[in-house]
Length: 314
Image (cartoon, rainbow, N blue to C red):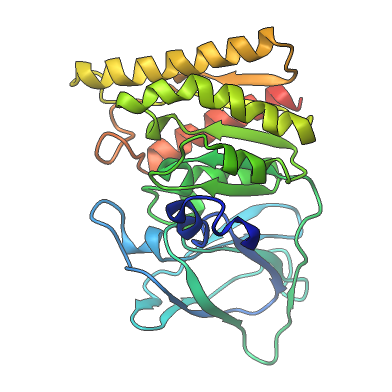
């Protein structure tokens, strides 16, 4: 988030915006080994999310034929004061001289203080400028930020980026996706391809009463500056077979958002789209603790988003 947001959004939102979820570094090399060194500011892991997801990195390559290839670090990594990864024994199946384009995804739940990327001096290493294509902008909660993916590439936002080819800006704030006017104001400054509003997991229980009014205030803020499509996403849950209270809370949140969506359409707001709980279609194997998806859940999230994005941009 732009430095101008400090002091204008709540301190929790500002602090979370400094974390590197959704950021990546693109470069080209033909080296058989890529080494990465960096430091982070916060704790390495959480009780429900591993170090490799909270503080780790993830490397993908695109070969000369356009095939995407995940690069394993195996056990060539260490988490100390300085974190070290080595992606070794890289094979260039489409020609070593040509090399690959790489994308290095940064930690999902930490702030990177500094980072170095290096190869042996006899090999090429050049950085690739950021895409100039309009991005998909995601405003969401801990789930969109990346909890609880085992590694950064498995966050659903990063899967959508890789498989759609669209840049994705991750403005998800763990525990703080509250549909606030100040955040909508900064969102409206982005020249977006698509806005995704996925905040309901932070607005269940008593907070669900905020949803209708905040959407009716927030969406017009976007529309004052942008005509990009807006996708509303329902609260997804998989613990309904064991908790009626959860079903009641989540259903009410979804109903309040749907009510706001219909009201905005009746007011004449154009290009509004909707992704329902039924379309997300989670199973009992997709969660870590009943709120945050595991890697299987992240894959299901991404698949549902990709289907909907292909509907919006056929």
